[in-house]
Length: 150
Image (cartoon, rainbow, N blue to C red; front, side):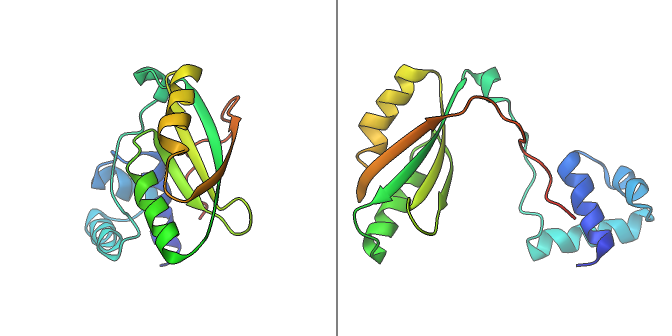
């Protein structure tokens, strides 16, 4: 991947709806080579897809929390069962496995505190292998959905 490919990726992260013609103009390439590079980036998996970025508040998800999860054991079966379980919870927007303690960081969005408490008690606390949950509430997003650096 060269500097031109990185520039294409940056432009698409800023505006995924660019036409190939617009993209080519921004990266100072003619349309054919730009299109070829774009197809290569898609085929190689550097571009995983295109999607709309939806404002959570616009769909009523105004309450966000970060949930730190510690598992009872970290054997392969427990980890796999937890990860399958957490992947099935729609309100978990992101789940990341961490080194050290805690074991996971979850980003969760709900409509309000009551909905979060229900999610916490009825789903998150009951996930396989959970020993402890610790939550903190998001006050505001300072950096959100930033394009990857070149």
